[in-house]
Length: 221
Length: 222
Image (cartoon, rainbow over all chains, first blue to last red; front, side, top):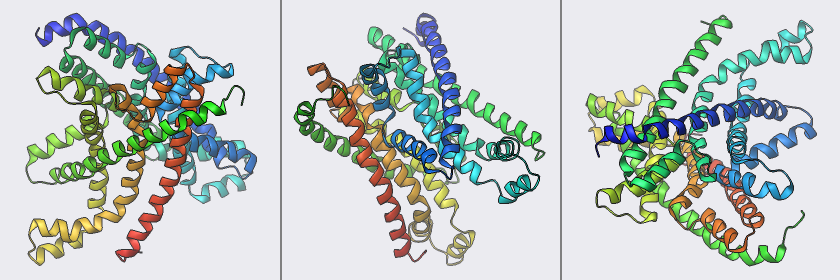
């Protein structure tokens, strides 16, 4: 079987898998961004009761493996009465894992905003919320965009693990096709190339574009 | 916590500790491969041969932006297709070592680039050979700034070993799966695996920081 015959026969299944991977990626990314913002801000709080839960969350999720967290959320959490279907469990685990890494980026980004910006906002008697939202966060976001680009690629790679709880993503389809055809080089090779294209031709250029747009908006072009 | 069975916990702990040892061996062996191969990949990108530099650069990018679990499957299944049979341990070590060598090559690259330009010029003016320049002058100075990154990836490789369970390497996750399906209880094994990972990776991160300070002091870079 030539590679073209292989692609015409199994290509559609690989594309189906890619669409599921894309859905997992976007949902997990959205969750990770929200969690990272909340946990990152909480970790900067001067109040211990606010800071402590964020620290525990970040250390637990960064200190253990994504695969362990995924299995725990899918197999153990139902024993506590919280059950997710496999699709939800997949992106929740990936989002929470990468959200913990993202929280550290948010914290670092906010701390990198010069002190004068805080003082200026304070002297204009902005409320703390307004100061954070209008002055600090936009500058912090620009500072942390490059590491977020890497983090999103890590997130894409993380979504491959959801195949292990039988979410029919690209990784899962590749395993299925491999199981029935034994054309391992073609199947896994194609899947690797699709992941690479997703990361290098979609995520990276998008992040570069976002950085340019934000730079312009902040008048730093 | 409700339904947590301590007798079961004590019963399975020895097996889990044994698997922890396997996990550490896997992480150590994979890291050893990555440390050496990473240096090769980093140095290959500094050669004057444009084609080699370009190819290595693309390979590193490719490895870094595709999932490790897929690479593990690739190494494990593609060999037999061409008549090379690798056991799970060997293919796991190759895959994880290769994956992290790509990351470590970036760490080394950053370290080498952080060495001041005058050091290169001094080597050239002393007409040192390329080999002496790298091994006696540049790499010793590139090491301390690389240590933090190297340490992070040591912890990273340790946390990624559970992926080896998919091809049947008997590390922690694999053992926890086995215990779970033998006893129809997943609460204790999975939770304990999480606790063991946490108990090792958190102190390890601290130890690495201490070690980094020690090396800096030894090299008089404090």
